[in-house]
Image 1: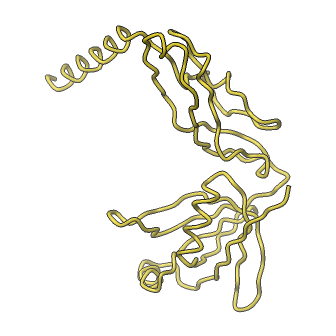
Image 2 (image 1 turned 90 degrees about the vertical axis):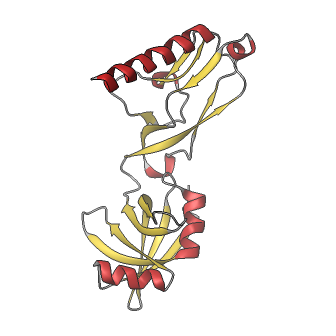
Image 3 (image 1 turned 180 degrees about the horizontal axis):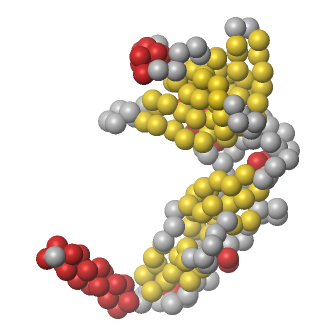
Length: 207
């Protein structure tokens, strides 16, 4: 499997708040590239290409980061590790890139996508989802973009737990407890759960 996408960035000299603010005025996003060897390199990324590659890659897909250091260019396979946003504008304010070794496993939060209409819902039950992300471990190029959970065969009082997930070859879920991902409950169970939650909140408020 080849790495198809590349983001071109420049190495930056200043890493303080003032320097970062000046970059944002120029429609550049300050960031840090954390190498697989433990080094930190301050970089600046053009906002539009960054937004495009983030939309395509998310936090799960490897791409190449090309760093221009005064004309000397180096290329590194990376994941987007952390993104910071403006408090009320839909705009990046900072981004962290994480360098990966393509031969060594990484652990990443991968989004869960539920598909289908469960048999239990058709019978009058209510589907409850408990997780939007699961932690998976694999080599970087084997990491899936999302985990698809087909709930079609889920009956009333059935549950799909993390250990039940159908994952690609060479991909494993990282967990200590076999937590539930999704269940189909009877309506009475759902109401009882809501009432218990309301009672607990009322007790906490009274205290």
